[in-house]
Length: 191
Image 1 (cartoon, rainbow, N blue to C red):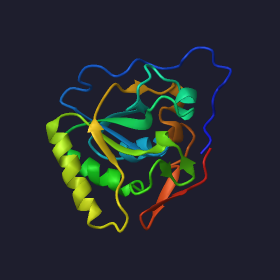
Image 2 (cartoon, rainbow, N blue to C red):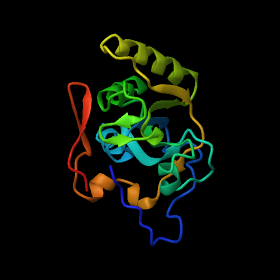
Image 3 (cartoon, helix red, strand yellow):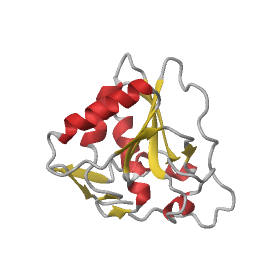
């Protein structure tokens, strides 16, 4: 998928990585499942999700830009940080949405989007999330013929993407940027 680069922008339009605890009583989850526009829209639609942001994580470059991430030298994935109210939605329920929203059996690819930034990954925040992620992956594997390649790794610094990427589909009147058909993600019309 091609995303606008806004080349004329001289300043980086981002906020620093999220720090602290988010909304009061909320827990944090971080997922990568292809184009972060559609992943964010999917999680924002879940009752109990209080706040989302798209960004970059899992790599080695500090404060990366979209252009750098697309250059395949940062190690970062396009990801979504989700703050949720555990009284309304559980981490296990978020994992179910994660597995349904993309194809976890394709390495570095979702639909027509390809590159390591589109990899499938769960970035866990603590031992409880790690255990649930592994358990859910193993359960999901029983319903798949192909091997799941999703990374399950500790969360690291999350760098919020440029502001024009935040709630991108919502801003442009689109519900999603991909549809899942029979476990395969197929690109839909994109802006």
